Each structure stands twice: as structure tokens, then as C-alpha cells.
Length: 353
Image (cartoon, rainbow, N blue to C red; front, side):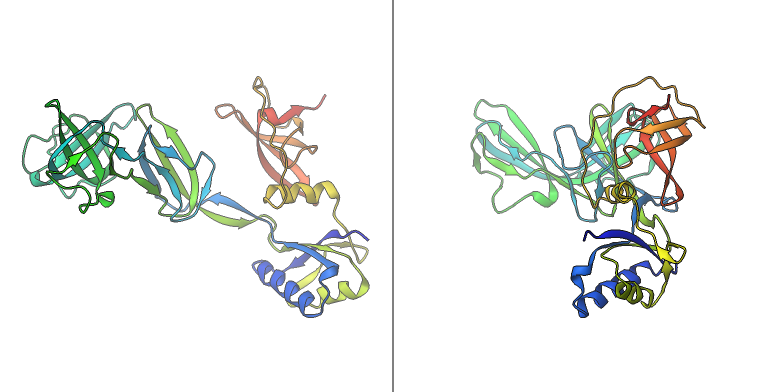
């Protein structure tokens, strides 16, 4: 016999405890052959209560390990700059500590980069997010003033390495402070073209969240909005079973279980396409991603549409909201007898004729 999916009603907030209790009970009784997967469907959403968005300014040369829509954990690698190699033969004549401050106009159109020697005492109050006015001093010594109104988007410590080349010119390299190895790179040493001077900077996520990558012309910005998980169906656990009278009673007698979703007292197995859509939605089952077609945006709220790709492929729903700017529509579909909102690209739906 083939296992089928059933819905078990629980007390809201205790879904995970019920899931764990069922797994332990079936394992201890040796009934693993009667049970398949047990799922508490969750979705990841932007934490609207969080006021902070983590930002990383990276050069265009940096290799990205994430893209818009990626979900990351704290400590995950986001991007890395290329390693720094000597361009020409020469001798290191100078190694100094610097601080790099990047200021961006409020409209994100212009950026200024200031490399300030630590000996000139860069202002310690200048941190990411601080608003800057044109003419404001950036250091206590020297002629370092902001040339634009804007906001600080990056502050980092660097080692500046100057190489006097064989033809009398100079090459300057800025090495991330944490990647500089003073035992290998020293003043007065000879360098050869191609020699490794320092590893490129690596950018790591400080928090768990959802990624947005913005291309701002001369650089990229990786933004991470903090996220949280939310139960898709509070108070329900989805169980894959070979249902017998004995198995039914074992589940009903599990602590915090209220009942099966049933009709006439009999548990109702879920339709195959409904459970398939749910498993795809939460990443338990893979499906082929079809490239969304470019279509003319002419959807209106209240209009009936058919979903032609994605986890809910084949479902029919009603347009609830439209977003022409992002070419998206929010469609209400009925799954497990409940209306569920789904955000889709317009190329993933078609009008019902």
C-alpha cells in the first residue's frame, strides 16, 4: 500500500513538539514502516519589527557568493575580493596604516572614497550610517574634507604598501588590515611581478536574513534584511502514513493532538497535487524552475488566473493585488480548504479564457 498524507490538528505553538513526539513514538514501537515524513510547514519572512538592515559595500571586482533572494546564516561568506599581486618588480619603500572612508550621496548616484593615513587621526566618530555635509573634516590633521553631502557607507582599516619599481615609478597597494602578514611583507624587501602581497577582503554576514544585491554603477551593495520563520498553517501537522485503526489511535492519543482533519469522523487523505504544492513551497520537493516569460502587464484585482509554473503549477486562483513596478501579482489559491496568498511573476500566470 502507498502512504498517503493526512493533517493532524494540534494546539497552536505546539506543532514541533507533536512532530517530535510522533517520531519518538513510532521509532520506539518499531512502526517506522507505517510512517513517512512529518512536516510542520514554515516560511521565511522579513522581520518587519527589525529596524536595521545589514549593508556591505563591495567593488565590482569582488566575486559574489549570494544573489538577490538568497537566504543566509550568520557568518556565511557573501563575497570576496581578488587576491592582491605585485604588478611589477620592485622594492617595498613604504608600509603605513590607513583608514578608508566611503561616502555616498543620498540618491546613491555619486560616491567618494577617501584613503586617510592613521597618522592624520581620522575622526573616530565617523561610522557607517553617519550623515555628512560638504566641507566637514574627516581627520584632525591634513586637508581631508568631504566634497559631497551624503552618508558614510563603509569604514575600514587598510595597510598601504608602496613599491618602487625598477623603472623608477611607484605602485601602491591597499591591503585589508586583517589580511596583512607582516612576517612576509616588510619594508625594504624585493618583490617580483605576480608575487602575492595580500589576500583579498572577504565579506561575511553578521546576521541571518534575506539578501538583496544592488548594482550601483561603480560598486555593488549587499543588503541583508533580518528574517524570521512563520508557521504557514498554525495548529496543523502534516503526516505521511499507512493509516490503520491502530496507527490512527496512536496518533489521537499523542499529547497535544486534538484530532485528525476528517469528515464524518474519518481522516481525509490530502489530494496529491495539494501536498505536492506544499512540499515544493517549503523546499521538501524539487521542481523545474521555468524561466518567466516577459508579458504585457494587464492583470487586474478580482481576475481569475491559472498558475502555469512554480510550486502551485496547475492551480487556479484570483488576483488580489498587482505590482506593475516589479511585474508581480498576488494570487489567492485554495489549498487544504483554505485561501493562501501567493506572489508570482506575471509570466507564471495566464488569464482564464
